[in-house]
Image (cartoon, rainbow, N blue to C red; front, side):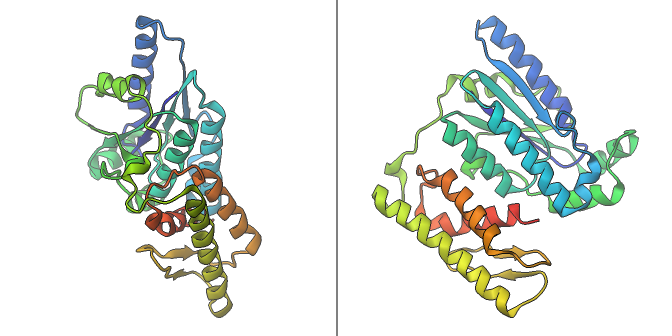
Length: 279
């Protein structure tokens, strides 16, 4: 069943809204006599400390724990609420791919709040984020956009809104079925063989480009990639061939069933995937 992705800057009321959605869904399932199990997954349920966001490697582990929990919980009889910042658009895309691969709908709930208000709420919490971590996370936050398929349908809930649009969320994730890959909308229609060929070819070219650049450069830098407006942001360490092969294999497995409807975007989306998963 559906995946609900909560997104917002630190201390923007995400868990409050997630719990509100969870209560509504439980009541609605009872009214409609639907036997869906509702799972709320967040840093607290996964025992992830706020200090994990101080270091890139620990933050990567936190994202890995979240995506793994989602994959374990998402079934035809379960609704999963992913209550986390989910501030990286590449990571939201990764969750979208998981839902699409499961053939289940998804939606994004964006908790909108002024930074000053969130900072005030954070300072009033006994378990708030360290001010430095708070500022860094706010700076890196990539706000959801409805034009992106992985951020749509998008429901923005402002901090002053009395309630979430619960009925609209129910309609989007339960009453509407997940659309199958619609190959008629592909800008460049391709056969199954050509799609897999392009997926394999483009991702391998990017892996080769990263390895080639690393021969001549040391430290953190960005690698320009053909057919991508986004650069590969490499960390201040050497990326091994084994790591690149593993990430490439994961990306291909996620997308081999035509998740990417426009093959011209394979390069850009693979770059986003690499940037999200590099420690």
